[in-house]
Length: 149
Image (tube, rainbow, N blue to C red):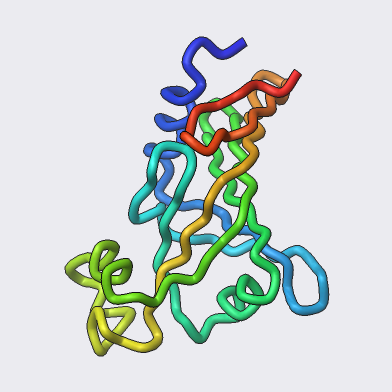
């Protein structure tokens, strides 16, 4: 049993410079894309990423919002899979909140670039793998974790 799963999982996430975003493509096949670390996270419940509005992943997520994010700690061979639903956010407030200096290199028109959007993944389930064992959790509406027995 993990003494403090929120802290353990949060530390693993915060040490990763990349995340793997998984979604279902238009033909029903799983696709995995490397993403830069989340721009923001609300505990273990919500994760925010930036991407191009014109990307295939945005098209796929609009069609089928089920998604997962995977973080790996290669040093200790541990992994964290977070499954839930993704939303594409294009409102000004979301885009401005997530924007960082230097993003102009990806979105030449700045924060109002129509090819810039935010992906918010709301997590429902977590699976943590460590020491040749997996532990599952349900993420409650308030963000707390409930172990699955």
